Image (cartoon, rainbow, N blue to C red; front, side, top):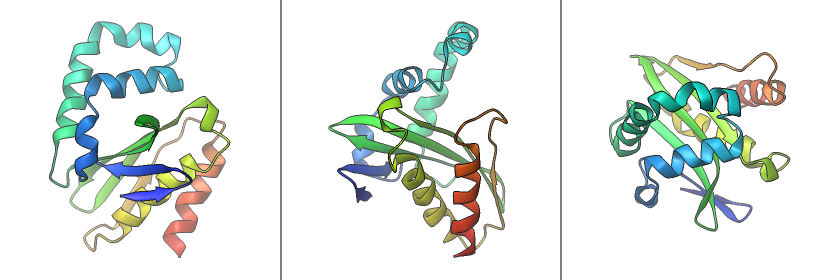
Length: 151
C-alpha cells in the first residue's frame, strides 16, 4: 500500500481493497467519465456481465489480474488495471481519475505504483500500455511509463 498526498494507493493484493465491490468500481468509472454517456448506453445491456468480471478481478489473489485504486476519504479517486497477457507480458489499461483530481499527482502515482510492482517481476519482459489517440493525458502517461522503465 502506498500513501501519498493524503490518499492511499492499494491493489487487490491489499486487504483494504476488500471494501471495494464491483458496483462501487462501476460507479467510479461512470462518475470519472471513463464510461462516458455514449459508452454507458452501449454497455448497459451487458452491465451484469461486466460487474461479474469486475467481481472476479477484485477477488483475484493470484498474479493474473491487478487493480490499483487511489482512495481518499474512503472513496475511489483513481484507478488502473493490469492483466497478464502472456507469461512475460502485462497489459495496463483503464487509467481513470475523478475530474477534480486530474490535475493532481493521482494518475502519475497510479502509473508509478503499477510500474514499481510490475518492474520487480523478473519474469516480465514486456509492459504494454494502450492510450486513446485523442486522450488528453496520453503524452503524460506514455512518458511516465518510459521514464519509470529507464530508472
